[in-house]
Length: 67
Image (cartoon, rainbow, N blue to C red; front, side, top):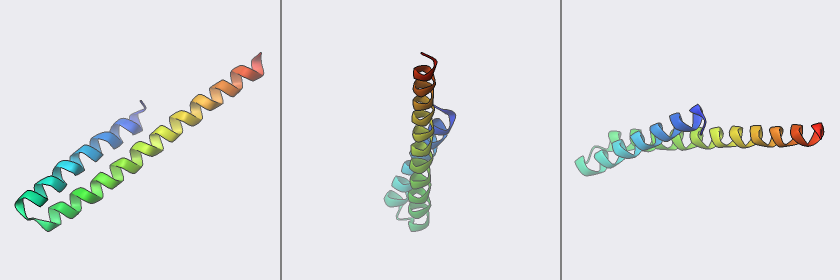
């Protein structure tokens, strides 16, 4: 797992907590802020996964070329 994936996961989970707290307390602003943070975290997590997979693919191609 890359640093970007980890940051995205933390941001996503934090957003989920804020969103749930907003729902429970009836605070629409907190709920919206949490939903936005959750979405940003999910995006960052997915970008990190994509970058990791691209790096793995590049390594595989480089190894195949060396042989």
